[in-house]
Image (cartoon, rainbow, N blue to C red; front, side):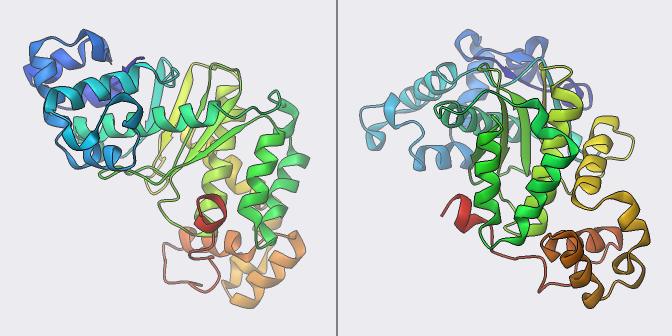
Amino acid sequence: MEIKISQKWLDSRPTSPAESSIASGSIMMLNELDVRGEELFREFVGQAPATEIRRRGWLDSYVDSAAKMTTDAILSAFSNFILTRPPTLATQTMFRESAEVAQRSLWRELTTHLWLAHSASTAIADEIPEFQQEALEEKPIAELVQLSRFEDGPAQAGEWLKNAGIHLSVNNPLPTMRLDGAALMLQDNRPLIALTLRFDRLDSFWFTLLHELGHIKRHIMKDSRLSFLDDIEESSAGEEFEAEADAFARNSAIPKDIWRRSEARRLCKKKAVLDLAVQLQIHPAIIAGRLRFENQDYTLFPELVGQDQVREYLIG
């Protein structure tokens, strides 16, 4: 399996000889590391993300006893783990990131790809229907958003995705990761949405889900080689694909004309938020979250955003 180190990241930072070796041509093949590259990867297996991967048991099937693993055994287990995962990273991996975040460490990017490889592997093991492209049209998406009004809305959303032929994988993030969601096409010709639930809130869940659906509809359906890794907190200013996915998420959740005329937007009052939620048959967290973002005031409506109301339905 290939792990792609994003070219944007490589171009934006100084590269040591070892890193240049491990990322030659922007693609690292773990079974073709030279001596310097292997030394660099040996350093990674001692980092917190690698330790957490072992703790979660992702490597259990590749070793006889985790307690007796030598450094060489750990390195071999990681290599086998990656090389036996289904291919997950397309030719063009898009990181949503700011200029500051572009100076990411190699560990962080590698950690993210390991997490995504695991997410893809567990997702593709589930048999789901063929991908239904028409599910991403305006009416079905509106029906998906209306599932938010139910207490178990996230679980119902998972069933909706399955019926639409879209894989869903939810895994807690690994240490150093700053990721909310990812979207890509798996080799079974079904899209994957992978979520971390980094923020266990309804407003974050619904926006991230719709954002990834936006990538599938606007971008991946046009070019299945594309894959997206999103930190929703980062600005998408100047990034066309991210701006398009943001717009899809906003307008799918609350139609543009309704939002423009709404008292919720004008007054930013709780009653107006609740009234609009009733009108649209959606959870008020979606409206509250948008107001918090547009006003850049995350102290607004803490009682409405659905804190700690997602994870229990998707992870348990």
